[in-house]
Length: 319
Image (tube, rainbow, N blue to C red; front, side):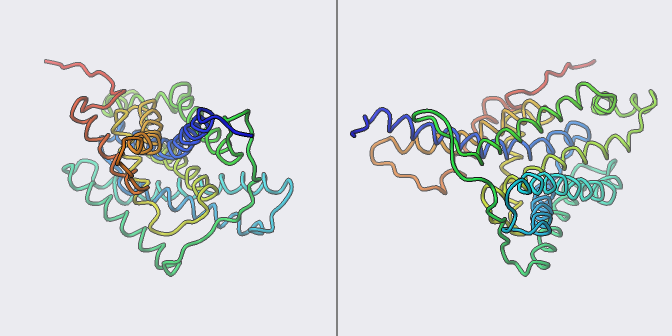
């Protein structure tokens, strides 16, 4: 049977679209940590990529405790859920310690001080894990059901569907917390004006810790999903996804939760579809490494034409 070129092309572009959504979901989850901390403290937590890495290793440890590659049947779902919870707890705990030791003492210091502190924490955590693992990669057990579903040319694997759906669910959960709960009102009040929030009875220090913990929990989930999808993890894995997620947060408008999500998906789609679109030009044959070039070129373009990002909130100037 001869398949028309149109359907071959449709299947190819659909695959690229799904791949973009998959990586974009990971970027968006990690970007939420950057955007929440910046929204409250106006600081960039450059150790957030390592928080994501710690979550991935914690999830690996939980799966190993369940039996690793020997997990089967209904226990697969139980093990993955336990890995997600364990990763969220590990990342949240690490973020709470980082906030207390590396950020709180420097909260009123010049902006450069906490930035350097965060970079130092990032390097420390990266090399600590590299030392503990002897710089060797760890491999997530291949326990997730294989196969795909869909109709015609529009197919998606079970793993991609799970990753995208889990990411969307966690992002909606976080948005609901920030917009619909008492804790969320405290977070928004501190982000607006910490001094006024304190006068109204809000515990500013506690609220800031909650912000770090919530953002880190999202990164922990991303760490497990990354491990299940790519299967290989290592101590240095947090750097590039962390920078990409920071780029996504800036693209969407850092400080905006919807902006972080939109920026993550935009970056993921730009990396996959953008490279393939350029390869359609006669004589152009860009390798996979060009994805990073395209991603950061997009960042430069956005910063030139809209420096505050796509979803940046409007601010009023006061006399």
